[in-house]
Every structure is written in structure tokens, then in C-alpha cells.
Image (cartoon, rainbow, N blue to C red; front, side):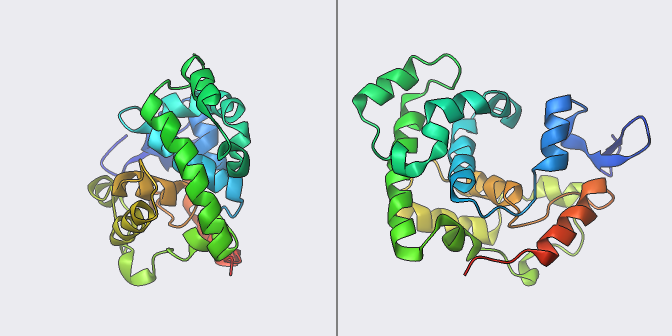
Length: 210
């Protein structure tokens, strides 16, 4: 990688640096990161897993994602909202996930708060996509320096505050911005990355939930 933040594969194709050439991380970069998502369960999953990532690497969480899905009922928040002390104990005993009591109980709490948002707005997607940043907030060019210098944004700070007011936890501005990047509310693939134009086209044709 050079100062562009891009790395080339054996064919010379350029991608964002952060996948590091690891096969599973590369698939995540190419097939998921930045592509617009409206599925409520995936949105809930991602914001919870970003909370679990706190203090760890996303690769660690990604490699445990199927275990997390099994532990948390596929991140169906209607089911997770019903979890009790027995479920907490089960999760704490599950070596396939991050066994952090605070993050486990946060996921259950956030599931209950997600139900409240769904009741008010009709879906999590409608709520989260209402925070999509306008062009005036986005950088003119998404280069390596810009990506590294901006782990938050005015919108992620605002969304973080709104979620906390609603009783959510483990939703700081950096966590929320990582969620926004992954779920396609912004396109932070670096200029020159093979995925940037693909994601931009998807965002261009994407029908925002209303």
C-alpha cells in the first residue's frame, strides 16, 4: 500500500487497503461494505456487532459473526427483546462469541429499543435512512487521508445522541459512523477502489425507505 490507501491484487485490481488481502475480509469488502441495506435484521445486527467490536478489530467480529447470529436468534430483535437471565447466562458461556456481559445485555436492551423505533417509524430502515448525510457533509474526494482522519461525522454524532436519548447503549459516534459506512448510508470506498463506482451506482438506483 502507498499513500493512496489502495492495494493491488495479482491482476492489478485496486481496492481499499483495509482488507489486507485476507480472503474473508476481501469478500466482505467486495460484497457487503458500503452497499445499501434496508433489511431491519441486518441493520440491527450490524449496529450490535459494531458495539461488540469496541476495543477489538472488525475482523475478529466478522469471523465470529455466524456464532453471534446463532446466539442472538439471527438478530431478530423481536426475539432478542424477549431474552432473559437464562439467555444472558447462555451467551456468557458461548465461547464462539465475545463474552462481555455489558455488550450482551446491551444487545437485549437495544432490541427492546428497536421495537420502539419500529412502532414509531414503521421500520428501523426508515429511521436510520432518515439520517443519510446530504452532499454538503460529504468530502469532495474520498482519499486515504480523508478516510483516516474522519472516524466520525456530524451525522454520526447526531444519530449517536438521538439513539442514546432513546435508551440505546454502545452507540458512540465512531461506532455509529462505522455502521453508516457498512450499511451504505455513505460510500467510503477510496477513489480508485474497484468497488467505489459499483457502490455509487447502487446508491444511485437505491430506493430510500419512506
